[in-house]
Length: 348
Image 1 (cartoon, rainbow, N blue to C red):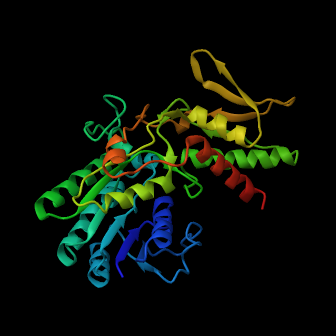
Image 2: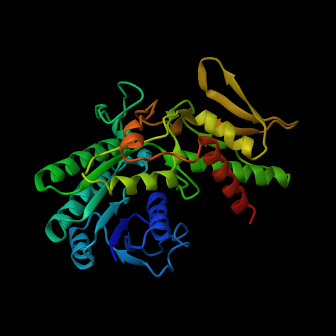
Image 3: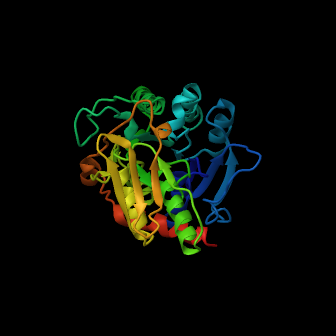
């Protein structure tokens, strides 16, 4: 039986990858987490008891733990989704972000090189590598122009993967993944912040209770959003080609955070309208279309980033043509599923 190490399984992509592999492949899956006093397994309940799944401990900042895992397991695949993945916090802890996201990838590659050089390695890249975009849509030829320590760390990881692939003939790929969301997305990310906030307001309105508005930063930023479940399929396709090659995964569509807000309230059956003061974006608010006219969304300048990425739009044509990948879940269905999930869980 072939063996796969998946890191970051407590997060969205790692848990979705484990579910996908256990459902579609007859492989032994080793899910790696860091040792913590109280790990949150909420995203893992569907597979923790699967006979082909085993929980293991390791840390991208600890070379010894990674060496030990690769040496003992002898994996056929090593899929790295572990990261310090919140862009906003990367300005506050840039050295830690680089240690995990860039040096951590090198530690993985070194362990594979030393103990299982035939293992196929996946590094999770990001559209934040493009940053201050030069043209749209962005493809794999677009220059790396990051605007955050997080984006810069992912650029470094991409370079490291190429160096090890070229130097040691390793099957190592760095997938450039545009924004992808889902019901397992962390609460610190803006999409989940919105849908959980909508669920909270939905419950309050239903029970005639008061509520505080959702506070957001730049609602005019444009992103290329997809569902994480579509992306893990693309990652698996990247890892099973005759030759290693980096690919870009995206929907090829762009939507503003403002549009995400509107659709989220729509799927909660809450109608609303924007009230904007010309020339003052911080005065923009989203009001409930009811007699009370409560504020649902309030703009807070504290949530603006030091350097904002205004537009991200990916060109996935290479992945579509060369590895047969495609998205199956639309933007509308993504938002709808997240809102309905959070409403259900808010009321139980």
